[in-house]
Length: 256
Image (cartoon, rainbow, N blue to C red; front, top):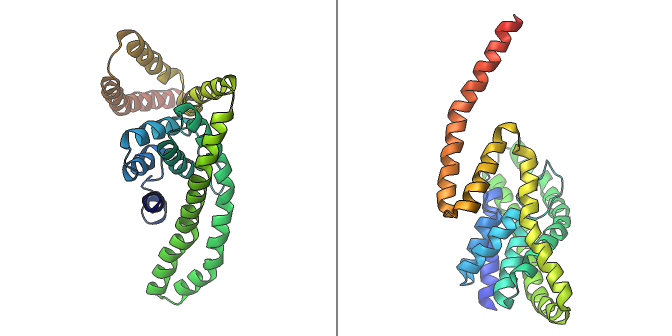
């Protein structure tokens, strides 16, 4: 119990550190914080496997301004912990993780409200050039209004939700579990499809289909595909932009 509480507290702090105490270090992304949670709970492999699936599921979800979207950080910490502590099936925890992500997004407004309570004191410290007071309010406010509620929410979800999930899974009929498994398998594809709507074009389509054919029919290693994709991205970035700039200059000259 003590180890679980410490692991969740440390993982939540590490996740919030990236957005609250650094320049957007992305420490709250599922692929990273899932690894950290698995490391702290003694199951690195399980943490990586679960977080990789959740990263794909949340890949295309982007928060614009103050809009509430799925809370991928809370979902990952809870899901990885539940998967490790309760030995839940992968398909079940992935589907559960997406549900947790959207449910936890409702708590973002609560955290913002807590931050608002400190704004008058922070503004006063800035106006009076009280740097020490400002630092204490800024750092302490982030810990009190973001990290602490996150730790409490994660602990409640993990300690109360784990046994309930296990009991629910044991009572569900086989056809329901097969349906949940099918839905869980579709979520990574849905995440990839959402991100493709942002980057897919006639120029990038060839890379997608060529990569799929090479990986599917030549059965090459995933690391090999990653290296090849990185090299192609560098080539396209360095030379594709120059060709586009040249075409734009030619069109400008023709119009002139």
